[in-house]
Amino acid sequence: MENDEENPKQIEVIEAIEKHNPEFVRNCYAVGLWIWAEFKQRLSQEELSFLKELGFRWNQKRKVWQNACGVKRRQSATDPRTKYQIIRFGED
Image (tube, rainbow, N blue to C red; front, side, top):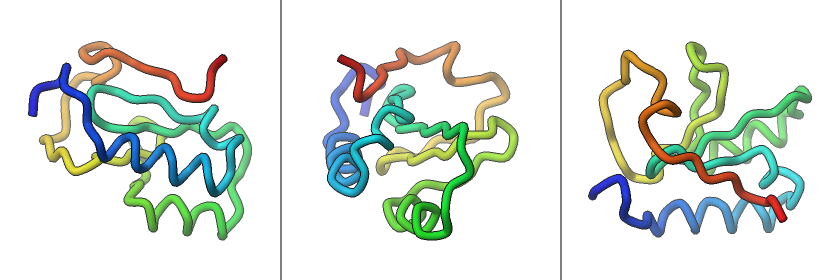
C-alpha cells in the first residue's frame, strides 16, 4: 500500500473514536497511513483500555499513541511527521 492511498482502517478507527468520545477525535491525526493521538490531559484507565482495544500502542520515544491501522513498518530513525502528510481530524 502506497502512502498516498486511502487506508480504510483509518476511517474505521476514527469512526470508533468519534462514537466513543467525539472530543477524542480532536487529539488524533493521520501520519501517512497510521493514526497518532496526543493528549495533554491524563487519560483514565477506561480511556486507556479503549485506545488499546482499538490497537493503539504508546510510543515512548515520540510520546504519542499510535495505531498502525494494519500497515506495518520498521521503526523510523527520523520522525515520520517530517516525511508523511499530516491530516488532522475533528477540525472544522
